[in-house]
Length: 224
Image (cartoon, rainbow, N blue to C red; front, side, top):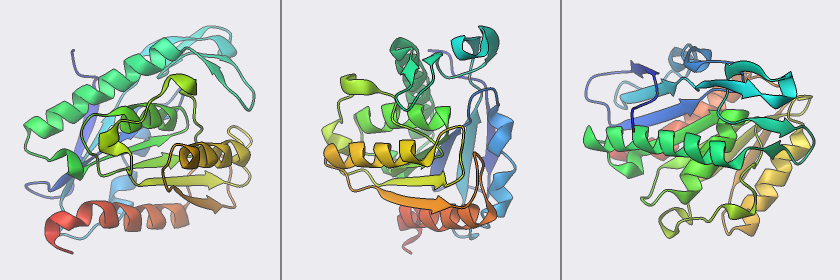
């Protein structure tokens, strides 16, 4: 499989871990590129951030307009109706990026998946079903879209999952994030949920919290 086009940002030489970060509907890998310096990561924890670009496809809820999307959304609502074959294809594309990082010498346990909105739904699909243990999942302003066909792989049956959501989000209401949290618990996981007084966006406090979580999940390589 050809790798998705992507942006790579390294915070130092010889990265000790990798973060693969997926954007939302209609955006691009550049959407979160600028967040890296604001994470203020310590010099002793050099990381590689990978921001892939979603393919451009027609999106039904937007009148069939072609835009960057990880999968087609057929119908809005608290239970999004989506193209499940496409979300699996996007998950496979992220698996290829994980494989690239492993080939570069990053252990799977030091690879973290992050995703905003539609990208977060793909991260759930990929991270929970991946056959090697991953460092964790960061799910930002997103929902659980995979349906009943997702099976958690034993390698990630205890993967750390951190959910971040805005209480004023009118695009993906907070109750969709809370429903995802309950779904994860039903699958035997122990997710952590944080909310912020914001809409469908990321706040400075959220970025600070993300930094703490990332350091906690990937800092083992430094002995911290």
